[in-house]
Length: 91
Image 1 (cartoon, rainbow, N blue to C red):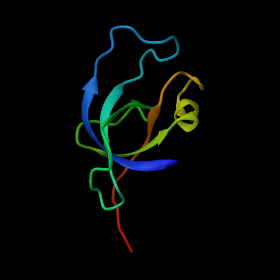
Image 2 (image 1 turned 120 degrees about the vertical axis):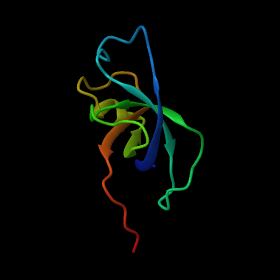
Image 3 (image 1 turned 60 degrees about the vertical axis):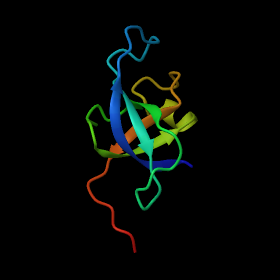
Image 4 (image 1 turned 30 degrees about the horizontal axis):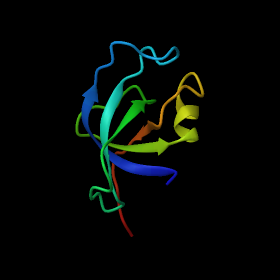
């Protein structure tokens, strides 16, 4: 999946980070289906928006797209938060 809804469940505190990830917040997110039901296991995502917080609905990307979403491209991240969702309407 290229882009997926997720809910922020918590934060991760890292005392040491890879060079290029300084100042980046890591959050625990629960991936969701389009009907906002849990879809798989929670993952850790780097917050490329610098604004996501507890219980917010967000967009996440994974793999290469996650690494490209960061301020310094291609740092080692598997998931990144790339947007905060205001509203979801299903047709």
